[in-house]
Amino acid sequence: MDNPSQPVRIAITADLHYDPTGYLTSPSQITAMVEQIAAEAPDAVIIAGDLGHGRAVFEGCLACFADLPMPVGVITGNHDVWSDRKGGYSSLVLWKQLLPGVVKDAGFLWLEEENLYLRHVAVVGSMVWYDYSAIDPGMSLSVGEIATQKMNLNNDAIKIDWPYTDPEFARILEAGLVERLARAAGSDAVTDILVVTHVPILEEQLVRKPSYPQWAISNAYFGNLTTGHKVLAEPKVRAVVSGHTHVGQHGSVRRVNSRPVSYTVVDSDYGRPEYVIVEL
Image (cartoon, rainbow, N blue to C red; front, side, top):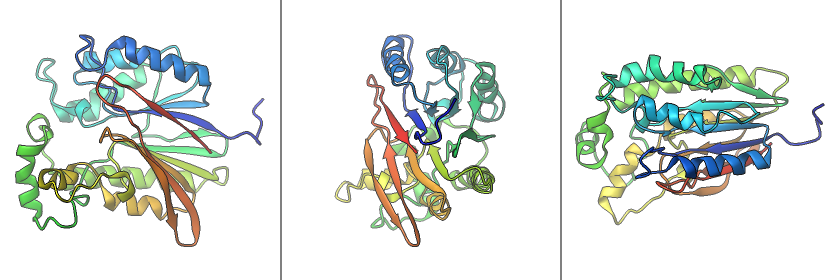
């Protein structure tokens, strides 16, 4: 029987970049990490995007988590929705149909549709998409100029083929996240909410290098501060965990008239999968 005095413990990993050839992250590296997670016996595991490019690779990464005895929630990352030309799948088909089905067929929870509830805790997740709000403040570029620069700075420009602009898709995902957040907050049984995203949503999660113009512009594609402001406005949110940047971050954000929010960016990189444990 669950002990209500014990904290809920949730393991979150991201940016695994599973690669059966071993060029990026080998299956054995991910399996070893999963064994470490299992030994810690968390109440749930969340995979926060960038499992791998292509349906077969995505499925192979999920298979590494198949024997875990606790619930597993999944969101995608930008690499997961790169157009899979080998498989003939567009980004839109991957996003709307294929990857949700693969996750559900594996017996896992698709967090873009529903929340995970663990006693007094709700886990609310989304890939989130960048809307250019995270560009370094010193960069005076228009939305059109940022979109044009993306071709030179980010592979999403050539590997994502859905019909949306980045700000348009960001608003679509934001609307879903905000709706699920309100649903969780409206439950009397929920006292603490963990928000898990692929793309960071807080200023404190970003890495600023103002003397490096390419990096300063690239931050436009590394975060969505607009969504972050809406998440922080919910008093029950206690923690935010993200991936995407491959640069580990951890700290706390103060809020007016509400408890602080802890933030983390999972410190995974190619060939070096990592995870964090959040206790609520």
